[in-house]
Amino acid sequence: MDDSSFQEIVDEVFLEIEDKVDELNDDIDVDSSGGVLTLTFPNGTSVILSRQISSHEIWIAAKSGGFHLAFDEQVWSCASTAEDLKSLLDRVFVEQGASSPFS
Image 1 (cartoon, rainbow, N blue to C red):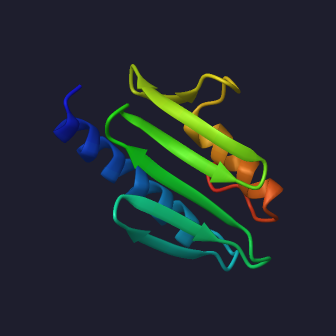
Image 2: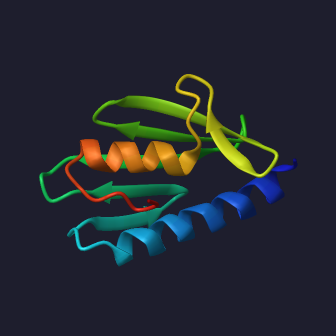
């Protein structure tokens, strides 16, 4: 995958996440700028998703740790936890005290 395709795919993923967060009853603040999606939860904690163009990965920083996800055959997956992006975000959101956006 080239950098342009990677950027387009990540843009779509970030927009989907923003849409799912907007559907939740939780009061989560969403800020998207400079290739970074920051989600701030009512309890003051944050989840930060950033695109890593050089490695073609999405990195997630959350209360429970940092995660690197690579795109493989239409699925973003984390090698360290074996979770796909949606499962990982569901878990992280619950750990941050919010509803699961994808389940």
